[in-house]
Image (cartoon, rainbow over all chains, first blue to last red; front, side):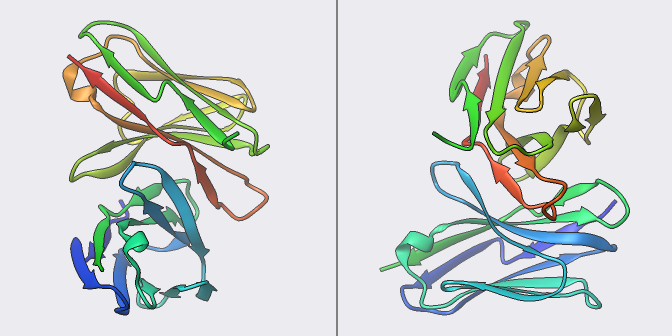
Length: 109
Length: 113
């Protein structure tokens, strides 16, 4: 079974700070996803990665396949970034989907 | 209209009752999934379907059944609801041609009393 570990579990930041959320996994994957869950419960897919780096606005996601590690960065954080960020991996050669337990981010004005 | 619509949004039901959660999508995606979310446990896969004739159990399928009535519709049933099935349920879709990106529904909050 592919284990997915996220860190930190909880993160509080001041508005404007640079934020990093980490995700490590244990076996080969076909893709890694970062999801955002808002306080109301809705889930939005932010990124899908199989290598390298992707950027969308203030969000940057990177993945290191050799180290089995991905990071989600938020630049110039804002209170509206407050949400739970979830790492999801889809296993290589299988349809196994494994979720991390999420990182709860609170950005304080 | 939302790309992935779940109904109902909230439901309270009694132990032993049969309940169906419905999911419909306008994305044209071939793959559909049902997940449940419990506090502290993250999201867990209940069932998934890669096309209308393909249904697969996920990691926590016991006590649940599904029906893929059409490419756009995927229903989850609790045959005899029990309190530990109280959770937030999400439907999601993906397109096998587009690299596994997911679209989630808004969720159904189910409480079994």
